[in-house]
Image (cartoon, rainbow, N blue to C red; front, side):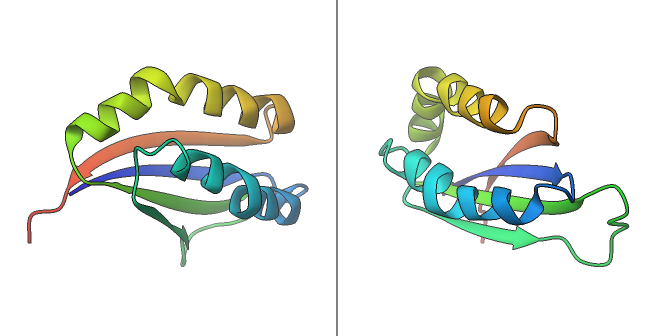
Length: 101
């Protein structure tokens, strides 16, 4: 299994609205691409939140082919939607991990 982890620091001024949008629109849109089986939303704890709240969204893909299909065919559109709606009120970085248990 592959985990596509997106860590996002959100400006406090939009945090509540952004989280609602994430749960109701963005994550369902990403899952509906068919590239991921499910997602988990986490809030980082014990971090300085003075300049924003940090979340990690972990999208689970069954293999690298599904993850690469998402990157090649869907990721640009999904990123543009977020930037179009929220501008520079958030920053994100992405990592890819393999479950090895």
